[in-house]
Length: 464
Ligand SMILES: [Zn+2]
Image (tube, rainbow, N blue to C red; front, side, top):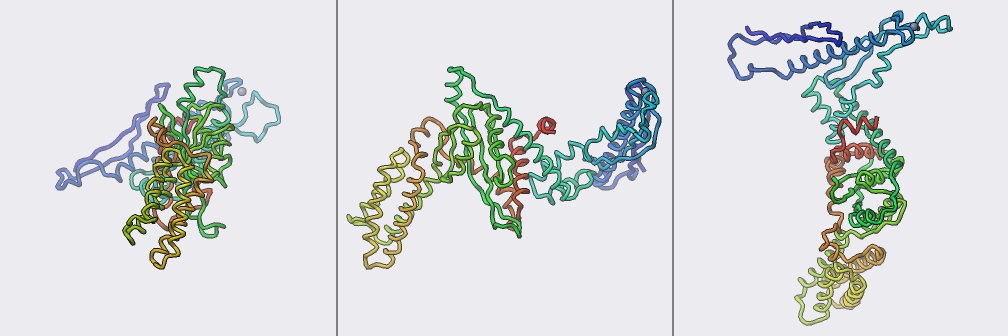
């Protein structure tokens, strides 16, 4: 039989040393299998839990002893009683002594009989350590609460390791992050009158890319789905900053975006570019966050998708009847020009082309060919759709080619990646996953921070 005993030697700042025996592991004198070599997970959990309890109790006892002395006269205050407090940690729940002291005699005869002081209660401001809260919240944001709890329980002596506790901690951290964002939003600096700096800032203005995503609502909610707004703020030389919110439950939706802009060095009064689809609520959110005018660009991807629909129906028509030199041929030439015209910012000529395609397709619907007629009707519908889309977003259409050649973003396709990262991967992973708007909003706050790498220890201390 071989045995290993782990002893902990603790030394206080005064130099007092105490030794505690933590655990003893034993194995056969000569092992026979690979599984008998080295530490086991269960042993490690026991060791960690005992080490944690021992360290914690020692520190808290030192703290209580230090705070027993009266601040006025230095005499030790009389002990009223000894209570215990529990603290949840990554390495188990520790029970610590929390002595209560009476008010010092030097303060009497002030009528304070019955008044007691508990320094340990003042130290333990929460039921868990900040580290446990952070790890639980990060897991809760990355994976389902149940899976997160299983991972924790499998690897650490953490308690409690249930999914409710993960949910509670994720929500608590989300509230801290939101509060920190509101504060950052309130502290945005105003731009000062420095023409050189202003020009430099304008040349490298932040680009906000926004997109909406639908999340399935819990049963009993008024709607079947609700929308989350997701996006990112990009600025050259800065790490990308993600944000996400459910508008109906965010305390100050614009503050979350404003904080993201502030994180990119944006100052009040500096221009911002917003790229989004045709939903007017999205650029409106950016305007309310910046408090000033915003250059809005219609997302090329959403525009291009609608051109693609027209091209697809046209392709179908040509398959029915290979084009001789007929009006169909002419319409096809117009369809082929659409993408090029819109890419170069020539939406007026694109609309003219659409008008010609529609009038041709309307003629085609009266032909005596039912297959042709159905497809021609679909072409009219797709063209009308594209034209309405162009007209309702006229102010946000630009010369995409020029902007693209200048190396600037023209599409939220990167923001859609954000939607996938933020929403799809966590919220719709399994079809049965349903959310309350509040629950989804809070998980999104933590998830965005985790994906950005903003979720360090420091960030939480700032938010606390
Ligand atoms: Zn005193």
